[in-house]
Amino acid sequence: MPETLTTPIRNIGTVIKANHDGYLVNNLLETSIVEPWKGVVDEMIVTYKEILSGSLHSIYVRGSVARGTAVEGISDIDSIAVVNLEPGSFEDKQELLREIAIGFEKKYPFSVFVELQAKPLQPILDLENRIFRVLVHTTSICVYGENLATILPPIKPGSESVVVSYNFPTILNEAIEQFSNSEFHVKAWHCRKLMRNLVRSGFEIVMEREQLWTRDLYPSYAYFAKNYPDYKDDMYQALTYSLNPMVDREKVLFLATNLGRFVETEISRYLNP
View 1: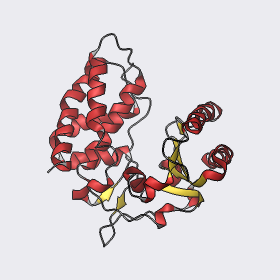
View 2: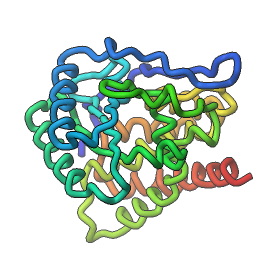
View 3: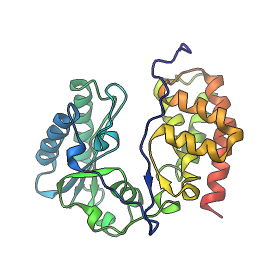
View 4: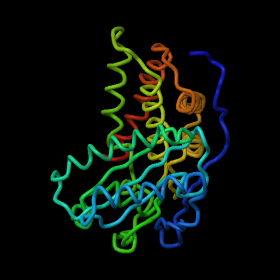
């Protein structure tokens, strides 16, 4: 893959600062969802209603589309439906939603990726689904049904608002194994997945110090670099590859085995003091 950047690195992104009580507050409004994304979201709502029918509790859209900052050709459309069904009892519906999502990607190519998925309600109410609680309090808008953000306990920047870091060691080790195998057919998305998780995990280990939260890549890089200046250049390279993924095994492995291992160690120190 050529070194010329097709997607420029821009200082853009949104952060949520903790309020005077130390909690993260979601101030997003449904009116933030604008065209051409709104038309897709409206169609997604219809799809969820058709597939999930009477079991549907609520629907959420998250990320840049929810904030009104989505960029055509760069952004994804991420959504979650909450259902009144037992965990594991609706895999057939999940599979159908995944197939429909692929159709959405072909129909609306301005979105890089489309996510349609369902989550059971009871584990969310029982506070067993930690990541959903984080997302509903930070980067999601309820576009249908009862908004669970009004029910779930608030969160603060810190270990309870981590999204990526708990799984990052697994993601990192899997990627190192893949990129070390000369017979493994590396694709650009393998690099993108690793680098985005690396950048976001780097931020999550400093968000409690900074008393803010973000999922956006540039501010994630910037706050990590502020706290770990010795690794600033390496993290900028990870940011670059997250937007302009490559299949050069040696370059990806260098970042994974150096910066990746460092972040992995810092995650362990932070989450397991």
